[in-house]
Length: 213
Image (cartoon, rainbow, N blue to C red; front, side, top):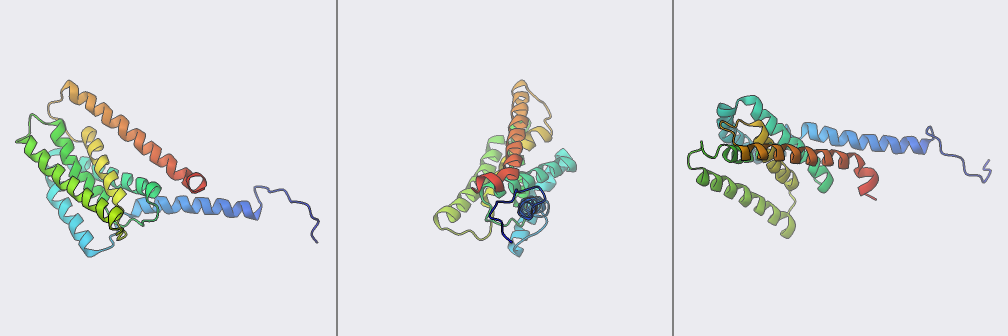
């Protein structure tokens, strides 16, 4: 029989338990998405392009900088892409390792910047990589913002992966003859990546209870 009084909400109340379960389920989904997005692909074409880029650009990096450094760059791109996309573009279900692929692509830019004097024709190489990256990102943004074509592709993840590839590549890949300026650049890259990743992690944990309101 109803008494007309409001019952106090305790930590064991059904409503509280449901809210907690929904919150932790949301966090689990985001962690699971970040963990599995690099190994699942939506389309055969997507898989083919990613594999070709990894083979053509990843193997040369491994030959010079060792495999474990390239793996760190790739994983940093996947993680950065997943975290950034879940905050800024949560309606897109990530499936693919494009964040890591973009990280490998931009890691070549990091190599050029940190080994400018040792590179052959660094200006030409830098121009080629920048043209490919900027052109692809511009086309992706045009399709998403102006043509309104989502295609289920996380373009924000591509951009975040590209940025992670440059930053992590600067302080993970080899610098054969470090200079004072390059040392400063190394510290800037470490600080910037740490701050951005920390911010994305915090925003992901508070997203459901703060940003969606």
